[in-house]
Length: 328
Image 1 (cartoon, rainbow, N blue to C red):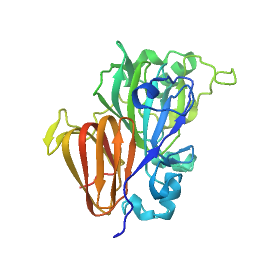
Image 2: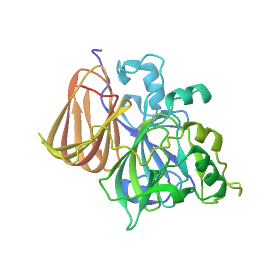
Image 3: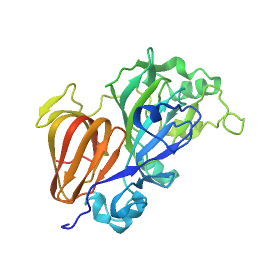
Image 4: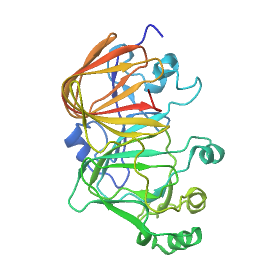
């Protein structure tokens, strides 16, 4: 790959799920969408919500359309004909999300015709007393879980974890979980929208009826071990790098994610194998490479196509850097 497109900004796809709030607009400038924004899909080629290129020669194209005409931009690690592998979101939980579980790749492909979902959360804001559910608090059996789902007592055996900004949670496929009210976070996940809901606080959907549960499929994929595992490869603190400080949040077979505290000039070497997703959580910087440059500020999401070059990020702020897989 010798001629590669310059980095570009993406416009998100918004989701107005009933548990969402309005803080993504005030904190990250998410305007022009619904009044209630539960999720902002910052990097997405998923059919349920596609990012759109914000400017430059490809302005107005969806990310998926761009990748169809520039397949090398996703990198050689994404096999030809394979769906785009990642989805990066901002989530505002004004109310509790349902207790749920996602299938792994093998089960999802066999039963849903799609990939499964392993995900990671990076907490950005949390109200006093905010918590989430992740795994079980004690040993349980499949039969006990099914009984508690039907009786509505499942939360009694879930592991409740208080959260603070900067916390990282790794949610492998099969892990029971739920984001609690008062939490704003960034989510990095496999590009999948398959969710098996098992407890929903008796809420009604837009049609006035209780939202459906997916008990059978959930029990098929549920991991019964306690808690949830630590993020693979996670670094507890930041390490100094030229231009700032870098913290590895997670490195698993599906994605590698770091947070950069930028204060100066940071350089990232790119290759033909992987693209880079860059999400500005706070601050302002100039993103440049041999293909061109652009400004990026709070709430902006940039896509850097694969290609042998160095990219330069110059400014101050907090940035989420995500690659597919485990780049060397």
